[in-house]
Each structure stands twice: as C-alpha cells, then as structure tokens.
Length: 137
Image 1 (cartoon, one colour):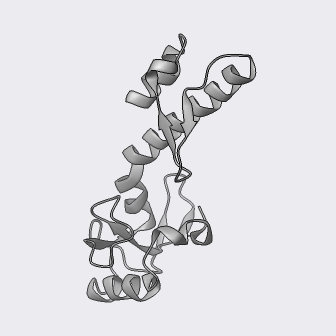
Image 2 (cartoon, helix red, strand yellow; image 1 turned 180 degrees about the horizontal axis):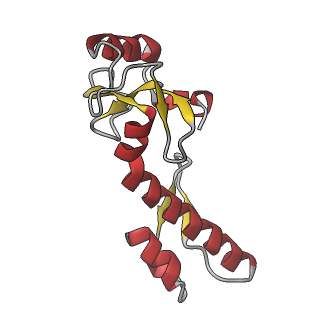
C-alpha cells in the first residue's frame, strides 16, 4: 500500500522519525542483519535490493510519535506483519462475501458508524457462518 494512502495514520513528522530509527540501527535490519541496499537472492534465486523499513513494535500505535519502533528489511517487516495482514485479508473477504449477500437481499452484517468505521453486529447475520468465522479468527 502506498504511504500516501495511509499517511493520515502516522505522525506529521513520520519521515524524520523513520530516519532516526534507521540511523539508530545503523541502517541494518534488527532481525536478520541485512544492510540497506545490500543485494540478496530471493527464494527463486533472483537478486533484489534490501530496503530498510520501520516497523511499529506495537502495531496499532502508528499515530504516536513516541511509539516503540524498530528497523526491519522489507522481508522481515512482511514476516512481522504476516498474521495481521492475514487477519485483515480474512475480514476483507468476509466483507466482500457479505456485500454480495446484501445485494441478494440478506441483512447487513456491517453497519456504518458515525466516524466512518464499520462495526460488526453478529446479531444481524442471517446464517452467514463463513463471514462470522472469518471475523472471529
């Protein structure tokens, strides 16, 4: 996802904070030790350049400028976020499934809230077990 689409979730001085975290780590991944711009081989034996990123140790604390952060290469950052990304994919798939059911005349499972977020109301579900199981996982 492009940073421009999610920048409102981050502090205004995110670029400076990220630079500080990377400098403190000497531009080295804190998990695997790869250095920024090193050349490595992927699982298909194709070369790629290591890109150092900044990961929030407390995943949902993105707007906090004092949040705990660490420097990770793109591979380790994806690994760090893997479970969270999988959960998000399941929720999005359940929402797509439910949108189709609503289109076919079923009741809403997700209702808009005032702040633009959606809430889940399992009591309005009429037999959509797959959407509920995906949401609870």
